[in-house]
Amino acid sequence: MERRTGCLQANIEFLQQALAKLAREAQDKIATAGRDLVAARAEIAELKSAVAKISSELAQMKAKAETTNNKNRARQHQAAAKRRLCSDGCSIFARYARQYQYLRCPSRPVLT
Image (tube, rainbow, N blue to C red; front, side, top):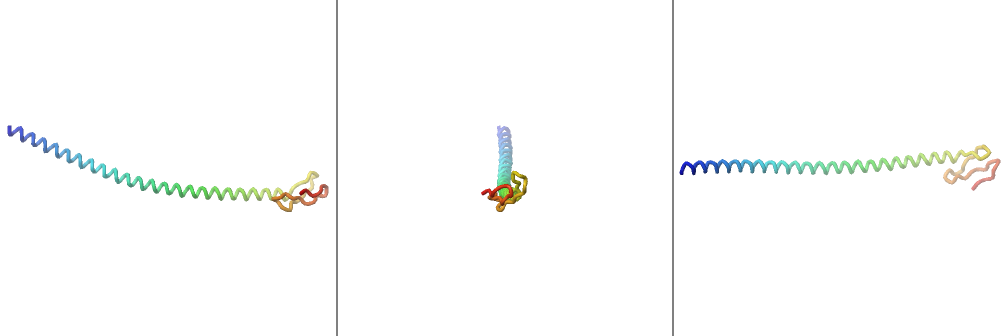
């Protein structure tokens, strides 16, 4: 009987050691996962700020491009308005490009 009790006690100690080892390994895995999660959250925050910065730069570039396009269109309209041809084919020049007011043409009266 004593022999069986000793064997049973050895099995219990073995199982307790195995259980303690598995508990330590699980705790280590949880701690590692926690550190990885913190690092991933920090990286996500950094990437979000980078995306926000790039988005604002893109908006500025679009606004600048739109301003440049508007200026180019205005220059084209001014150039087109400065030099117009009347129906007879003679050249007439605009005083104010934005208002398209024509100077006197020999074949037509002034248009207002």
